[in-house]
Length: 82
Image (cartoon, rainbow, N blue to C red; front, side, top):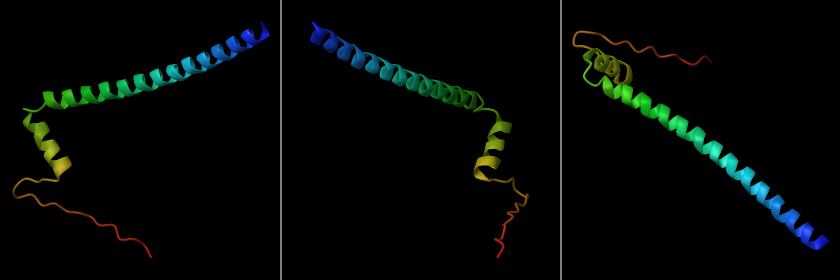
């Protein structure tokens, strides 16, 4: 009887550990899902602005470093101190 009780205790102990581990994995997946949903919302917002010429110009200037004809672009270089 004691052996059966001990076996059941060990079985349920491992089961509880497995359940706790699965809960941790579920939590991690839920966090990842929330990050993906945020990324999707950001991309959808950018997509909604695909015909906004001011936004396109902003992106061209910011992300590509483009300038309009006749403008001058200055690049400041920081020299390391010796």
